[in-house]
Image (cartoon, rainbow, N blue to C red; front, side, top):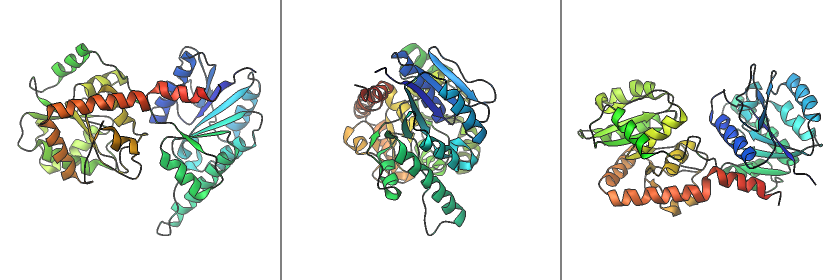
Length: 381
């Protein structure tokens, strides 16, 4: 029997920015490079980014009812067998995260194999939450249940998502953990690192504490940590990468009295330049609201590049992080604990470099894109 063609359904794809967008493109290209026939279907008024051997199909009406009729017609003329791989985030498919018709359409489509990758599952329900929040939770949990009941295979970005899914749909089949790889290049030349260092407004040999993110829920904690790390230490500089860095400096760091001459914000950068700037850091500090986990591509980027990471524990932190020795996890989830750990590592070069090496090895074994592709293809053997 012929191997099925891959038809990846996603709510976002380049040129639309986003973590799922980058992930889907990287995965599609990697599958195609391995000899698979790959199609991508995503909402777009114009075109989708084209790559060699990947067939892209912009959906003018997205995954709304008109778009689903268009998608049905276009899928039916594609060669078979077909495998639909859904990159699922409920908010990404329209109708403010409540696109129940899309999930019902997938559940009713029996002519194709259906695999679902849960980047996120649903919104939780709580007695203490407002009724609108709980209404959204009920709808999104119904959507996830429909997909889980129909899917031939399930994948989750973190093991916690499988436990959450089973909490409201106990009949869900076992899911495969499929970590999210870095969405920026994982190799940077020494010359590229040297160019970045030379371009930064810092003295030669200065200590650079980096952060890569969107400066959302953990912005206040990050600011408090950086204020302590930089206080009175003229040889230390902060390098802030990612969207929202400038606003973070203005709204969070400046009110704390941080010397802004020691805070560098390069602005928007390409993936290649983000990787080079990360590789130029002495270490990075990456706090997360639910702990470091395998869906945090900002952590994966530094891990893959062999840059030491200081972070925090949390509900979604997998055991592999604690056992690997590849990251430094603060013993308390406070800005003070993160700052102390950064300070300890900056005074322990051998420990920091060993941890960075272990982290890079962990990435290659557990999280790399090649491992993702190998896991997906293993089910066809």
